[in-house]
Image (cartoon, rainbow, N blue to C red; front, side, top):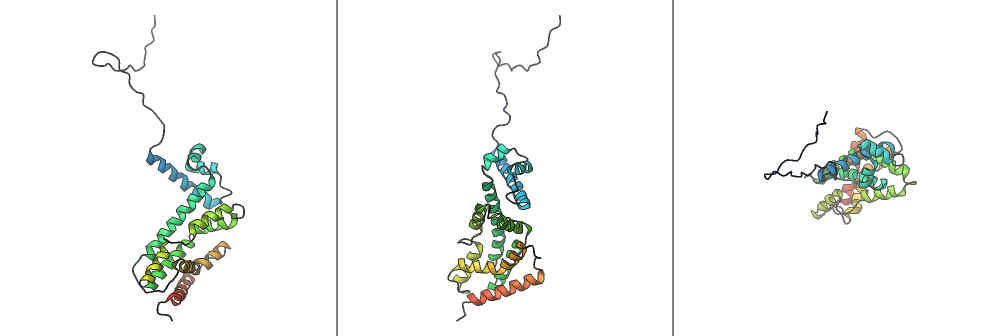
Length: 233
């Protein structure tokens, strides 16, 4: 007679000789906080790459999920709408650019040195592939998706706390420049520096060369200092 051997693992014995029930190890379940953050970052990185390459309308949730290596339900749990995800992409990009500008605007030096360094950083950002791609997406798709323009406008609008606004306020409070409205002055400074270059890139015209950038920075800073000089009558 052949008997089958029971290969199941038996529970261990207690000191009294009784079997002790052991808890089964659980697999899966809710991810840890760190893993959840890493997953969200992966989704945002994938969305950024696809949005900037394809535009908003042609980028599907399926494509983002595939690029990030997650399921659609997982993505939807974190970002219920595609617009929410695009808004976060815009916010991350703008905050990264502001951080780069803040490094220059907070530096120590004469008003001309600080303004010229800030202007060059602004142009570097404005001419970067990510910035050009985002500008083109907003310009091309704002009529079909007006909420995109509102998102970008809200993130990029000059306001209190912006590093350029705060730099100009410090210069004015120190008596170096005479600026009654730092927000308005910051808007004018940014438009002088990047306005023409951004227009050319939106029209797919050649980007300015090094000589043209140097000339624009110098002339724009000259005009700005002349207009806001504290010694000008």
